[in-house]
Length: 400
Ligand code: PHB
Image (cartoon, rainbow, N blue to C red; front, side):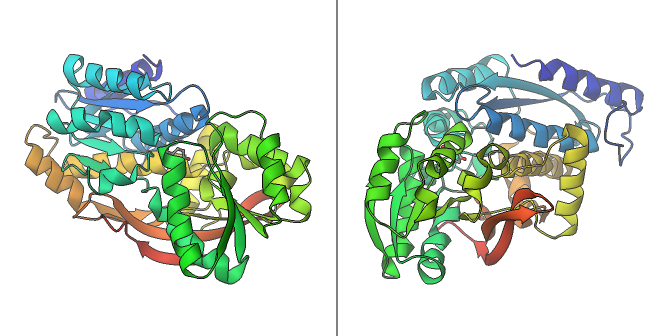
């Protein structure tokens, strides 16, 4: 188990037992009343190893930042925070979800970065009536054919950031592209959503290629992309795959005759510093940008930087918002989690202004409804960040 569980639990216990506020980098905004309530057990399932390890860390940091701001007490109950590494493996994820549900008897389950792990735990969560808040994994079917009243998603469906990008890219940037993504469910769902509107607008897909997740040398794939003569390359890669793909895209000289574009994760704050110049000018669509100018984002990005000494990223926003949903829902139920209908109604009712803009759940699917921002990487105050070029408001997964 991750060492965070002990530290956070001690903080919660301290806040709950004494009414005092533990010392931290971020000043508390709210003093907690003493409480003798049973802890709220939160099972956090995230990858802390392999390609998406940094994503797991960012989600964790975002959650910690929010829970810190409310003294680690929700609905009068101190948070007991348990974490497990899914190792990005569906079978490991399923085993650890079962442990959380059957052994630890968690009140709520959260986390999940990869679509494959999310699909693997779906039936267990549904059958055991465990409320799950997905903090990343975009698995489309969990908002469609395989949706469950017990599953909410605070992040995105794989369709959401890609569908608006197809038509936008065709009209604003390039009329023919080469598409690429890891050869897994997430990769195909993301690219299919992009192609839908790109091709409907009249765009030509000159080729597509799906390397394995965790590819270290993209040379053979980039050779093919380069040979296609496409005006732009559109990809979904994330974590260390995104670092290598974009750096090698620059290294093989593709940047000289082809535009770089993709799902926002390809060019997000977690990878930009390592990608460097090869990322500059890249276009992408996502539900957040570091430079979004709203009061919630200004406060969040400043506090995050102060606490962790680095820029926030979209995964941290998702963790932060997930923690907020839990806190607001538990406020509505007075800390009660056993009555599942009441808990589900409370979560469904949560809406607020997030650093990403307005946040609300679609009552039909329990997936977040949110703006999608079209961004371009540019030098901002001497560092590479995404600037917002355009916005598609209140994007809702179709649910079918
Ligand atoms: C996914 O597998 O659903 C996934 C992984 C990484 C991302 C986004 C989605 O950045």
